[in-house]
Length: 487
Ligand code: CS2
Image (cartoon, rainbow, N blue to C red; front, side, top):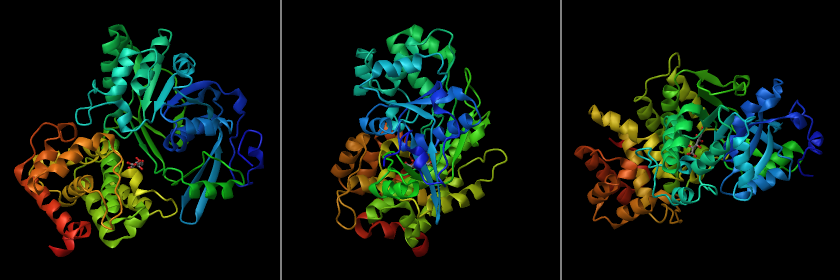
């Protein structure tokens, strides 16, 4: 039996249910990017606000690219389950906060209408780093991006996140306060989205750009929860736990964190009810999380992909890779200023336990996607800052070499195909593959300004990277990573 409003009461007794009347919810939040992360993160904080009795915050969820999730959710009256797993523990709940699931290309009018509705004072976004059409190294709008060119030519029929936001804001009555909460893993994510949206709007209509500047708040946020993409196995596990079939079920870790800059234009859900921290300055939290968690994740992903290791937990259980991952985390940790009153060393220890969580199958192939968007956020600022003060980061530098080697290879160390899923990587990979030797490969890679920026990288650093590429080619990833044991 499939999960729906009618059947949810038939779920197993231990499954937590929405404790409020869903039919009485208003549509106060519009969310762009209906993936698993939103449904297991921001939607649960909103669920907590609804459970506290504030009915204003039903969520209209929008998929911009893929119709499947909106279709699956619509067939379930927008109900879905989240199951938190660690060790032998598993806690399941059904979430009621989502009230509508739309696939934008089919119902664009409804989507921009939902953003324009003054009852909605919040738009949240999880569209992944590449969903903002920016240059990864400068965070400026990529005016050559095909979606941006399309949306500037047809502003009433947009397909990009920026185009949809602009079209919705245009239809909004003046004076209706709006806050757009970016929940993607970018440094200064709210400020970045503000800049991109203003750059986009000013190409269309200076008055719209001014309106965004004056009326729309874009707080910075740090979001954290490890939410693997669903698999047939995770859906079967969810079915056993629920006693119902749920095509949108999520199996994720118990940990969750949301730190939000307290800068809103109008009303917002009391996300504190779900444990969100509202604060004046999110930047130290962002840096800690983007570097220690996401930076370590990316290093694990490329090393594991090269070695044919499928999940993060299996990678952490591998002696060489697990030790290397701790080294990368320590390198990144050393570059941080701790958020006030926060113990980043305990954060790191807790993080290692999270990465070892074998009850969730977090696939390294998933994390390895879109490296050209992720590396400039997760590793390069820490490397730049360190090199500027003459400090080497041996593990982090090796992680960078592992990524470049990964882009250069067709197959992993067992001869199985490596499919780098990264639309921004084609030119970089071609340069690496066409290079005359390792030194030339590094020179050509670092000249790729969209990823590495325009400032020159120190020569000794380049030579170290070239030597790492040689080790990787001749002796493999384990030899490069086990340097601490051999030097
Ligand atoms: C991961 C993130 O896929 C990735 O690149 O590093 O999705 C990570 O799991 C989340 O940011 C955790 O909060």
